[in-house]
Length: 183
Ligand code: HEC
Image (tube, rainbow, N blue to C red; front, top):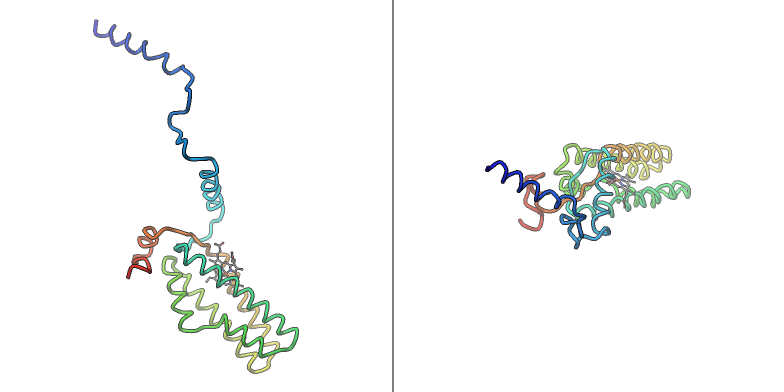
């Protein structure tokens, strides 16, 4: 008898499965396609780019990209300086990408969540110092070979590392550090 009642209950509930839903019950109607699509596109993009991720807070990532664009502008000035045989402008442009204590601290901060990044960054700045030294000695072929060596440290780093922009909580857990503005 109980079995019959049970079967009846099951049967009575069946048509509900076939009723066409008036609206999909699990879809969050507040999430517009515009809000969801870029996220999944970024996930796909990120999975295609298999380089090692350097975790960075948005402000750090933006700062790093600004620096990078200036690195390229410095290279541009160096090349123009070579064309004009202008050792002073070569030296001043190379000085922008050369090593300084402040630069060292920044590289250390940027690379804290990605082993090897800081070392690669420091190698780059020290190599760029050779451009300034050669410019100081008015040695044009020395400038060019130091520039070539420096560009190899740029491309070497780019082939290994990519940015990963993360929130404060993720950054703190990946780096074992308090977020920068919470000392
Ligand atoms: C220690 C590592 C490292 C070195 C050295 C380095 N870069 Fe980068 N660079 C990066 C990373 C990481 C990115 C972000 C790449 C990404 O996420 O796709 C980047 C991005 C860039 C970008 C893109 C900026 C933007 O606005 O998107 C330029 C241009 C660039 N680098 C130029 C240079 C030049 C020129 C040099 C050398 C003179 C150089 N970089 C040296 C790590 C480095």
